[in-house]
Length: 68
Image (cartoon, rainbow, N blue to C red; front, side):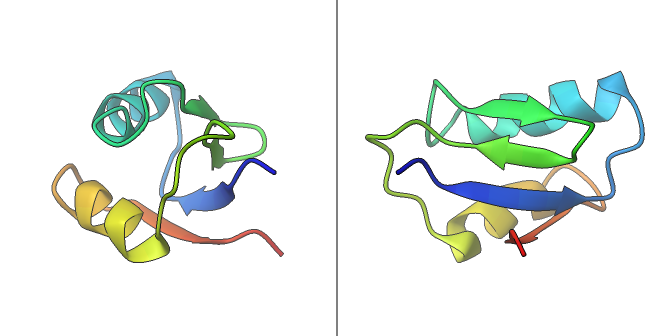
């Protein structure tokens, strides 16, 4: 099953592009959406929440959390 994380701090298409660009460093197939604000990684990707948040911290006030 593909991993999904909720991404807080995204408000526009520019945010989506910045987050997607950063997360492609760990999965070229990541899909980032604004509604709902999520990042979905490909089936083959093994991604940790800490790894995602470390990348997001370098680009702005974005934060990943487990999808409820």
